[in-house]
Length: 251
Image 1: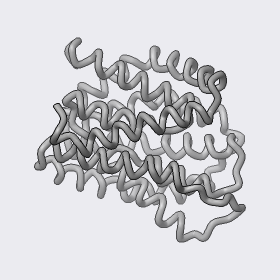
Image 2: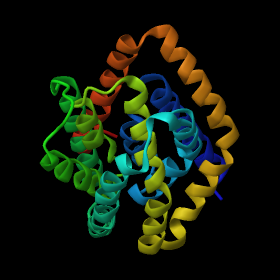
Image 3: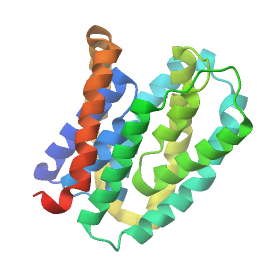
């Protein structure tokens, strides 16, 4: 179990990430993983805390939007994501030999790239996409989930290219996240062992509070407005991405 000095920053970062995810509909991983790296956690530990912390939110989301989901809709995308997830975790294991400063730069570069893509990539929604886009998006999502704990952007871009309503989009994303939680935690444990247990238990202990935070985020997002909250979130992500890249010159 984490000491109090480790638990409090973890609790704060997970709360902010879950709050923003609930309010803006994205960015939990992009916020939580780099922030925990700055607090001294490794990527596997940060990933584990993120995955456990988002279990209630994803389970609730699937239940709430269950009328918009079908097993056929998420089966093949989910399989493509899960097949490539262990490859990403294997790559992460090989990255552990590099310095924490280099890891912060790698994660910062990913966050910055994903944020800029979110800002500038605006696909025209359509009823159907060429299957090739799915074969690209979901394996990439699984790989990036494994290597940096942030597999959401590739899926979000694919979903935004469809002419789906908000319920369909959120239901699909919640479903994709939920079906990968147990496999992702299992693969992380097989590769990294007991070192991920402490952050996982700490995140699980926060579950009642994170449920409250989720509800607060949903209300706040409605009051502030999605567009203004999106701008604030993107600004924070840009700052995290740049600070990661600049980590050799920051203390």
